[in-house]
Amino acid sequence: MTARAADRARYDRATAHLDAPLAIVDLEAFDANADDLVRRAAGKPIRVAGKSVRCRALLERVLAREGFAGIMSFTLGESLWLARSGFDDVLLAYPSADRKAFAELASDPKLAAAVTVMVDDPAQLGFIDDARGGGREVVRVCLELDTSLQLFRGRVRVGARRSPLRSPGQLAELAREIARRPGFRLVGIMAYEGHIAGVGDAVPGRPVRSRAIRLMQATARRELVERRAAVVRAVRAVVPDLEFVNGGGTGSVQTTAAEDAVTEIAAGSGLYVPRLFDNYTSFRGRPAALFALPVVRRPGVGVITVLGGGCPASGAAGADRLPVPYLPEGLRYDAQEGPGEVQTPLLGSPADDLLVGDKVWFRHAKAGELCERFEVLRLVAGDTVTATVPTYRGEGHTFL
Image (cartoon, rainbow, N blue to C red; front, top):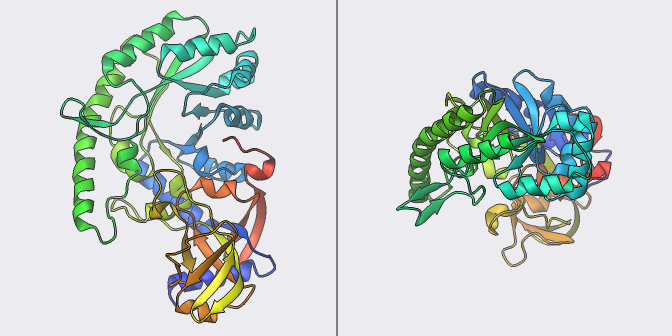
């Protein structure tokens, strides 16, 4: 029996009393992935990306482990909810335009002490001031550095279009603006190198493309190491007591941690290890989060139909954004239909061994987005469901 077949047998035994659709997290794999992240971070604390977990119980589990500290949130509403729930270090990774939430933040000492918001434009400071609604608490802010690689005087760009701040001078200028403005305190810098941390460099069947990605990432890494260090020096000249410099992501933990300028690493997807993380040479994780769909039809030889399945991940549309049939091994989509809104046909010889009511296990393309489809996660240890915990959705929150 292969390791994957053994996992399937465990998951089927653990959930035999439960009807699909359902989602699980394998705690042994989750904890092993957490240990691997800590090993690669080499002593620097890891700030957990909430969007990649979207389950308070699992955020609490990983933050109880040595090597993890703080949460990186994705909306201001999520940030305030987490702070009210007892998390005391929440970094909002994206600018917000939520007036009501800013008013709550500026009027509550506990929230203002726990939450740091992201800015990259003076206009955002004005927006926050206008939204305060009489609140007088000092708002903690973080600057975001654009990490994209720009070649040929900016005519070629590799990386996400995020912050407009690229140079040490630009970040130092906004740091001075924040220092002059009452009601704000600059506490950190964030720089997410998604084109390094979030792009697999071992694309199956594409050796030339894989080599090109590795070359791009090596070039981008060299440029960013130098520029990030210069940015941190420039900002610290304005704000000597800067609390943190955040960088990295699951795919670049060890290289980002090696930079002296970086004080903490961001990671989250590496806890669940979705399918997009299969194509990396820098690390190997264990799939920890899966979902099961039930077989409801057997249309013919080598074909089954499962209920549901149409849950693609965000990003540029493509086959790599689809969930992948994982267990039993050997199933594939019908190219004419793909995963459907209500039903999904699957092809392959394993289909002939599956009966109506049996489970087919899938891996989502991305990590936390799976939790937007399920209200609870079943936590599996060995071949037993040891707990059922709510996702953000299960607690009544869909922040985006």
